[in-house]
Amino acid sequence: MTSQDNLLDAVIIGGGFYGATIAIYLAKQRGFRRIVLIERESALLTRASYNNQARVHNGYHYPRSFTTAYRSRVNLPKFVRDWPDAVTQDFTKLYAIARRNSKVTAKQFARFCREIGAKIQPADSSLKALFEPRLIEDVFLVEEFAFDATKLANWATTALQDGGVHIQFQSSVTAISSGPDQTLRVAIKSPFAPDTSLDARYVFNCTYSGLNQFKGDFAGTRTGLKHEITEMALMQAPSALRGLGITVMDGPFFSIMPFPARGLHTLSHVRYTPHMHWNDAQDINPYQKLYQYECATRVDRMVRDVGRYLPAVHNAKYVNSLFEIKTVLVKNEGDDGRPILFEKHPELPGCYSILGGKIDNIYDVLEKLDAEIL
Image 1 (tube, rainbow, N blue to C red):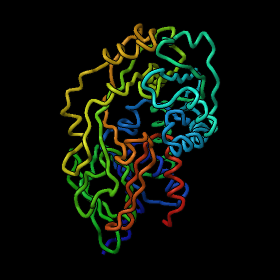
Image 2 (image 1 turned 90 degrees about the horizontal axis):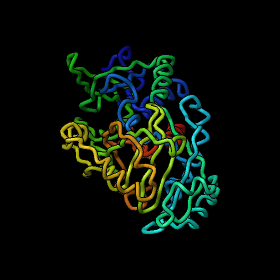
Image 3 (image 1 turned 90 degrees about the vertical axis):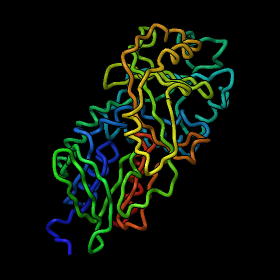
Image 4 (image 1 turned 120 degrees about the vertical axis):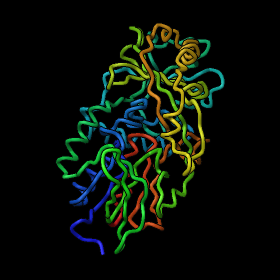
């Protein structure tokens, strides 16, 4: 028998933005009183939640996935409403359409934006002058924002404390198993304490790249996953590009975006940002693969290619790079869609695996949770 005194309402695995937000939701919206959040790092939101482009999407990125684009459009104003202090809006955002090898023309892109209800207007001549006209068909002024992951982490720390959520840092879950009396047992490993376990009514697996790295009765997600080791180059933007965020698409595909947490810009490139990729497997630990990878920057190649379209980037100063694992659903490789993964595990009633492709997808997850009888 499991002692009711020791039984938790929920264990959340992963202290990124999704894990923290779900823990806060359970405490404040669903009345859970005994919640433990397990995080392998020494602080919240330090991995994929930080090591990314810091973009709050408004749909423009996804002309080949209407559903992802539309959900971004719906979710962006909610995100700005709920985390105003963490959202940076004081920059000009441009989308430019390449003349050659683009999967969308300027006319198609403008029509797509109107269909999803996203703001768009022609950029003025001074902004168009930043681009090489022989390679760029047209340039549009749009509405898109960036977020500061350090400010989101500060919010999460305070909100978790207010909700009575206990955080166990520098700890990893090794197994999820059926416990007595229809409970779930979570095995935990830490370099600073003996191995232990927790019993809970619910387990929420929010480990992003580590979704399937558990033993016990956990059978893994039914949805196929693909991992990439990615590089975001952090740049000091030249004066011509300060106060701007720029994306060129959709074949040649690169972005230079404000990164508020460091006061810099990220530079990413469709060809050079992904360093290697593999299909998810339980015996291949993505984080171990990253630790063993020689993280040699490709920023010179990024700048060389981006500079053909946007010459001012040659005057940007490279600072360093953020290397991280990026995880996507295999089924969306063809259309660049970024739906959430939300799976219940029949072999472990009460266990959920959750993955979001973008930070604003959190509202899609919360809608799913609202529909669950917990």
